Image (cartoon, rainbow, N blue to C red):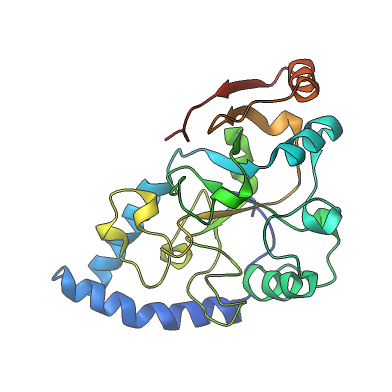
Length: 247
């Protein structure tokens, strides 16, 4: 039995998600002329296929990467790290508590670091503000990650709309998928997520250090400055220069 990646999603939130999903799944099953049980079986298998062996990624701005490499540890917003997302800590505490099961009193180091899964829509307007540097994490980080098919804060309307619940990335179910999109119609992961955001969000527990990095993509003409390049070489972290985002 795999150890859980992080805190358990509250049963009350999962129950709300199941209720919201119920109507959608009935409609999806009829569209495919399948029984509800058979639809659910096929849909879960498709979700597993969409996330299987995909890279775990984090988007960064140049300053964020430079700080990360220099300190050899990535800090989330509650630890004093930068964020290009919502800066309201009270709202973050509420959403993480209600949807992820993170105690509102949890310290920064016990809170997740947010990334996304390969197969998300890299050119989507919601990913671009997070930077054009892609940090690819080593496969073993999968053991500490949960996933939802959208944005925890935005897709749930600040934890007021139960459209998904986090699942262990190693054992995804229908609950992590976006309630209003049919995974059986998805050719790629980006087709199955909340279209407003275009990515499948990861919640990574236990921190991220430079030892968790597989390599780094500098995309859209972004290039490391000399100091960052020196730190990368000292840490023996490989990097690549890309004219566009990698697949």
